[in-house]
Image (cartoon, rainbow, N blue to C red; front, top):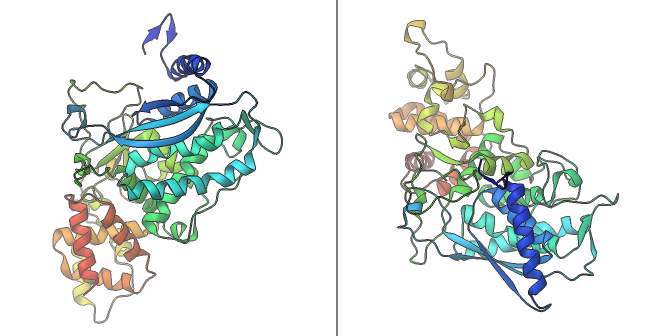
Length: 434
């Protein structure tokens, strides 16, 4: 870690320097003056340090506008999901006699403000990580208009805190911002009735009935792919980030220079910085460790969504697909059993077994197959040309609740156009309609 005058150059150092700079700007600006801060960092630590410095410096954030400023052809943007926009934060000096905010009022206003802004940004073609960080400004407009925000027990609600805590005075305001954005995103991609509300003492994991009906792995996958979406450019095309690549890991706090070579990318799949995934997952009750090696793999600060082909051994086993085909052939009537469960339970001859990699470990014994598991199984059968087994599985899903079809349609809309997953999902959907 770099050091300046013997002090570590970390988030605390950065926030202190920014607070001093913004305080000086606040001092020299007239009371009716306007300030503008341009920021394009995409780590949560970078944003929290900047916002903390602005609020400590005596500013109220009154607007947030994403502006497309980054070229697709710059070296930094090649084969990565680097932000396509810079967020312009508009701010004014906070009055010296600013009132104290009531946390219950702030918490009720937050989802309405963010929901309105998300809808507007999406109409303008702003998506994914660009949209997430562009929503921070409107959310901070609520918080920063007050000298401080207190709860009913007269406890200070800080800007940042422990995102794993339940109590608002320990958790911090920004954790609620991430929670609201995540819930609204799930409502949009998975469907549901209206904007979920966030009460002042809401507990993590509360989601709308429609989104909560799906398992954690389905919500995690949908939210992951939603965040990976690229902002539309002025020409109507999308960023190259729609390739099967990753958001670079900027956890160190400094952006990579444009003239430097791109960082090495992880092996196949879609990747996001661990901190971004954690910030979304925790408030929504998604337990990342439970899905490690099943739908995701974490390495060197990056969370990688496993490609469907890497899940073949854990979902079907070495001879699972062949067993499904044989059962479909012998069935004299439409099967009402779970083919995936049978494939997992079917013993594999010891001679046919091969060592498994840690990132594609089989499901735990007795674990019930999720909707995402069954959907990935259908995609794998489609990929291997096992038509009879696929049709039998889809027949079974048509007799179930509509979660399978709803999730398939949602993920088909989220996967990049040129990805293998998108191609397989669309083929499965065609077969479901037959």
